[in-house]
Image 1 (cartoon, each protein chain N blue to C red):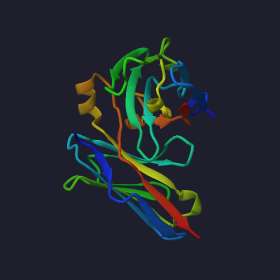
Image 2: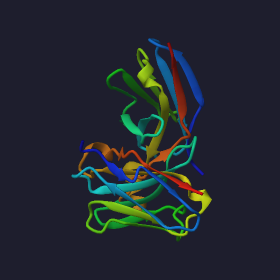
Image 3: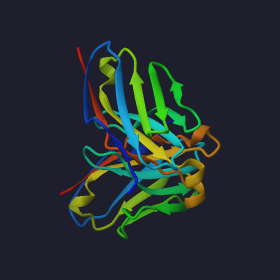
Amino acid sequence: DTGVSQNPRHKITKRGQNVTFRCDPISEHNRLYWYRQTLGQGPEFLTYFQNEAQLEKSRLLSDRFSAERPKGSFSTLEIQRTEQGDSAMYLCASSSRTGRADTQYFGPGTRLTVL
Amino acid sequence: GESVGLHLPTLSVQEGDNSIINCAYSNSASDYFIWYKQESGKGPQFIIDIRSNMDKRQGQRVTVLLNKTVKHLSLQIAATQPGDSAVYFCAENMGRHGAILTGGGNKLTFGTGTQLKVEL
């Protein structure tokens, strides 16, 4: 399967702990996006990378959140000092600038539960 | 702010009937629209897309209609099957206009979704 992959699929943590999620995009895609989705809502944009450059960040991305894509391939999203309000599904998507209409393809997500 | 929204939160149809899921958008600068299907516990799955220079596009059992005059998007599913049961989201982005504003990004703005239930 050459789709977007995310790890872990589920993460349960205690409030105040740090967590890190990983996303591996489709191999030829140079654009990578992070979204957050809460129950019953559509995904909300967090941040965007083109190759290794982080080009856009949402106001939702507080200073406790940091994302990296050091080599322009996989990306990590770290949340420091987690809060209960961080509980959500964290989705990664990738697309290709040269691809058709820059369609974003999503991974299965990482479900975060903060106790 | 501008947003994408859906008219109905839940749609129930009989197996074999056609389904129509509607979406309203308010950002006149949007020029690319996508429908995604999301099953429980999974990420959104691309179904079909359409650019603003088109008003209709067909795929396998699915058709997307775009009415720019009233800023309305719809997804039609023919001969609905139990496997079509899921939440459907429309999403929009500003395409090239958005790229100029943000430096290359094409972030998607999603609505809240419509739950499609297929009854046997």
